[in-house]
Length: 427
Image (cartoon, rainbow, N blue to C red):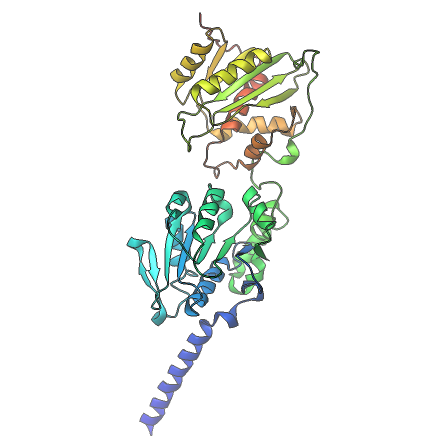
């Protein structure tokens, strides 16, 4: 009798474990309404949600369901880097491996950057920095995680769209917190993109109470909280040194010949050291100051230019605007810069500057001048303005060449005006 009771107990225990396991992995029953794919015909599903919403779980579970239903066979997994694909999208607590019951887990082959399911479906891994690897492969499905933070988001997105060419209706899932990039704005306005929004607090039942209390205290009613917790698309970048509200437009007084009537006009250059498709831009900013010590950013002549082209552009603008000095950063190829300008016109007054302090340290006092309403833009300078308003100290990694040139020009006019810098004039 005891043995029978013991066997019944073990059987009931096994049945309970199976039931618990089935319940745990029943995504359609566990998912919140805003974690389920939208109805209707669509090509891209963007889950725009705050941190902790469950974006990764939603992406993983949706792919698991589609694979098991035979809806997809070839999948691209795209993250900020291969490490992020592996650590978040595949191996993470809510990644593809862990949303499968242990006996149903796909085969993971990290050396080949892929996982394989028993029914033949395959997912390949791609890092956003190596987006050229998306040339060639073809897929019927893709999952892109944190698209808004990719440095080359537009290039990644374009290459991926060219890959989605298998099956009757290729689909893409995008899981991301928002940032006000042009690509994100375009996707939000696209008729082919279905948007699901959500906040961190939608998933409160699965988050530590201490975490929720802390983020409420620290971030609630802040711009960063609006973006990172409530997934609001801000018109200004949280944490950026410049904000849009700091940029004001007002032209200086111009003479009859069309030149601005200013006490000083300088041209600052942040030169690129290479000239190929992936080279940095050469930053060229023209700025001036009037008798009341009000500064004006006059022109942005930056671009991907050969040394001769940017040299010619600088010299032409020097004479056209009757500038009094050219300021050049010489950290990157100082001799090259001097030689380029000397070859075109050896009489140009040149001041060489060298960056000995960090970018933030140099840029912060210039941003403060904007905040004090001491700097105006003579006309809208959209690319420059986007660059400075996207610059987040400690986060922005791509060199903001236009911003650097702006900082050098305004430093010369407004912070170094009482100094006596050494000029170099070639004879």
